[in-house]
Length: 484
Image (cartoon, rainbow, N blue to C red; front, side, top):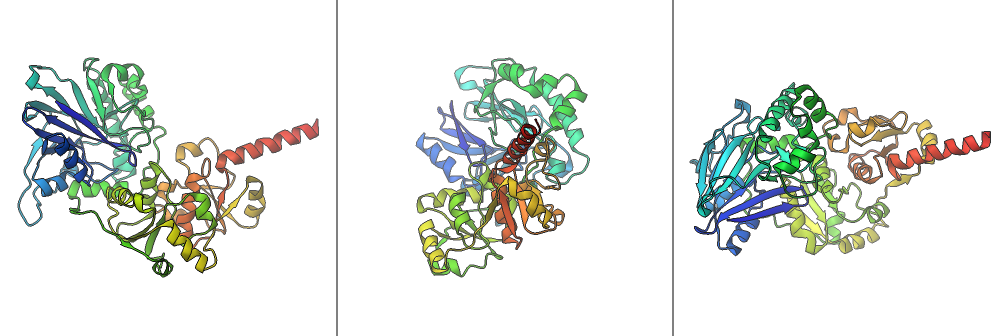
């Protein structure tokens, strides 16, 4: 058996290419949309991808199953469990007419790819239709499964959050029912033998859970012993309270991913080929209509940028921020080094930001900025400056998660997580400037650029809430020394 984890650092997402080397056939589980990567890896190992399987209707990226079905006519395996709201609606909607080759699966159904047997196991909770897949290599005479592809059910150290249908997709009064269902699925998981390998769909940094580990795979025995959520599996009430507590605010774009993955991801075909912009063409961009994504570091961006540009976070925050700041109908121009251009475009199309029309290098941007006298800047203020600016009419916006803010906030601050700003635009505080803070200053910097693009006057709190607490503690200590 051939087994390859294909990991996307920008989404902390794992797809799995599993092949039968005796027959040369392979299947991909939970592929992303730029499917040429999987096809290339399969060809390098003398395999042909003949099938694609979905564990569930994803919220954090666009599935590549439809893309594979259009491009190489794979068989699609998808869940037929769950209620009517969460059925795959695109399987009978092939481009040009007709139906994709597919098989809908119920709990316990099996299918073969070469000599490999896959058994669908209904594991609801994260979503109603969620499937896990047992893998057994019958070609080697083995009759018991060696591992379980768990999707967003069991992660290393965590379980998939059951609240997204409510908090991201807007289906009210579903998170507690989902948590109870997840508790039952967790109990069933513990019936597996300790040796069974666990292959999850996400790792550390994903917003699909709250405490995912950075190790890519695990075993049932390890999770039985060390997965905190599983310790509550036998007590439904305790489990519900634990699993719902402290879940991070979901990115704004999650609702759109859910809808498209259910109803039909637009067929991508080829990657966008953005035009190389000159300095003059950059200067002519209307950033109220075109999203300019500047990938330079914050220090360089803050010192001078095209007014209205967006500065995303790095790492797994790159797509969380841009997916929460940019609407899919907007044209996008990238400020990015040439050797990073293709990978940046790939990241964007994985969450449906397809309208990448242009790009320019940081050196080209520098020429443009010099020609206009340096460009726009964003202020950063120290914690000690906040009281006077607040008293003069400034607003304070805390863009940390709800859980983080429960530990304390700056007096008078409004909390809206940076990933939910578009969803709660009407809740933004009045007052200018808007002083924005997070824990250490990174998320707030990205949020500053989003509000500045909308015309608000903003300032980033240098060092974030952490620096604010240190300043308060220092002032208290100084006052105590003076009084003594």
